[in-house]
Length: 565
RNA sequence: UGGGCCGUCGACUAAUGGUAGGUCAAGUGCCUUUGGAGCACUUUGUCUAGGUUCGAAUCCUAGCGGCCCAGCCA
Image 1 (spheres, rainbow, N blue to C red):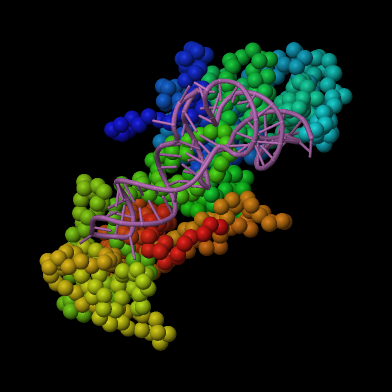
Image 2 (image 1 turned 120 degrees about the vertical axis):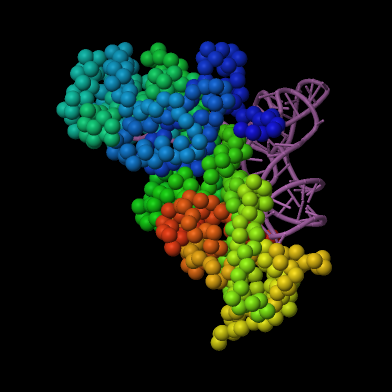
């Protein structure tokens, strides 16, 4: 943290609540939060927002934050996910105080359930799942009491004990809270607390065959950890009365639940269920496909944690459900990469350039700046010779208006090289330009003309004899619609998949300094964008992912006035 | 047609009864050995109608619009 001015942080409603609580001494000056992922999938950028909130707010008030896995459903949860989640939280730059699992509390939760039965506040129900649904009523019609609702405490105790002992098959009975079947809030119509699941748990093994539901586990877990401010997303607003009901009936530490809006980003899907579907149906190569919004995916793509944190701070938090433009995320990405990524020259689609008046066997070492935004990054040598590659896009035989790059008779600057003028072109039998001939001005070495003449354009290049080959993967959004969930009748979100979301460019030519890069290193390929070496890179067979393109004024001019999809 | 929540520039978010501000996007110009970066400027907003008040984005009433809830998922 080195901001010269601690710019007054715009407040948000959660910070306000915390400050109020501190003022009234509601929790004896403590602030404690928790980040409670279910280990049933990989974390995504939406979780990053929650993480920044949970950890960030606690940090701000010298509080503590636990990482707690909400592992109450053994049928969907796996240690693979637990491991990835811990890795992702650390990668984002946060450190948890306590590491817990809801399953740590299974014994205590069971005891409390017995306590509620004894108080006449919970009962064992023999209704089937279908019957429970029927008895629950609808949004507009009240539910009706289960015939088992009036069982004696002794019978409930006996049955619950036997549920735990494994005497009944899955689905045979549940434990329910006895609240109010006529409540306008469906969550209060005798919600299920425990269900029978003869399923091995990733941590407790076969110790349990009854598992607590989210509503019965979450608030009590918060309470056990003495969490003061328990943030969750808006869809849990209707659960808050129940969250409070359990805590009150049990007379335990009163954690408070606060709901905020989940992140929605244009052109991206942030639902673990749908992300899992993309993985399972093979639309992407895995959870860490660089097109995925998972933290492992965008990490592989080349995003850095600082950019994500800055983004999360900038979008704020509220209770309105909105949709943030992807451009906002990309802005913070570029902002950070611009400061830190070393510059390098690479040609994605090579066009051969021969400098006719340059000596055949000569090679010069040109000085190139590593990062104009960071003088400390130093310089490097880049080899220059008679035959080069430039970008196909940087030459036009018939240049349109406002096109400043190379074209017949025109002079441009080769970055850190010389001024060259196009004298001639060679075409193949389909009349495509396959080779460009130029002359150079020896007086312009390094890129400056002693006579002060200006050139409209500077283009990048690599020396053909010295270049190394690479595969470069260019990405577009995974979906073609701003809201991938918006579909025509009878279709699902996969109908909005972008068939052009990945383009693998194979014959890219890179300057030789890139030869030994390690996977994960980030660079700016000058004039093109930011790129990150992929873990699939082998020496001699490098693979780069384009993290994000540079802003491209020319593309904008060429495309004309832009439209939204 | 039950209940809960939410409506501020194109997007996100401040203003906590007292000047509607910031960021992104868009546009214009400057600068530039990246058509990058940077800098400057500009456009656009309080859902509607009433009310309370010296004064309302903010409080009240009524509309309108959006999201969520009928898992033995979280």
